[in-house]
Figure (cartoon, rainbow, N blue to C red):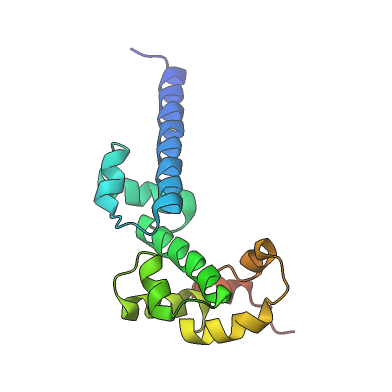
Length: 154
């Protein structure tokens, strides 16, 4: 019979292994956001089942792999829209979305305004601001997070 400490050590080692694989998935999403990615392919690449990947990813990062992918796409879309030289449809396809309607819906959910409105507002709001600061200031916040961050009435 194994010593109880060995069992704990094995569980800890497996957890670290899972976290490393989850980080590889998140890094891949960050690099390949414009490519067609699905949870099954992401899971296969890190030798996990899609269900296990989804559960562990949500525990580690607070959102599903698909939501993480969409957040990354919308982050990139905000940067492209601030530049102002692409139409909303061009931005939609440039970030890997295949449906302008779905893109607009997800963008509005994350950013709070439709992409066309964001494009018009952001052009003036971030003028003269270094891009690294503009990226941080305009980072999408999911609506449920925005509600949590709102100040409580006095």
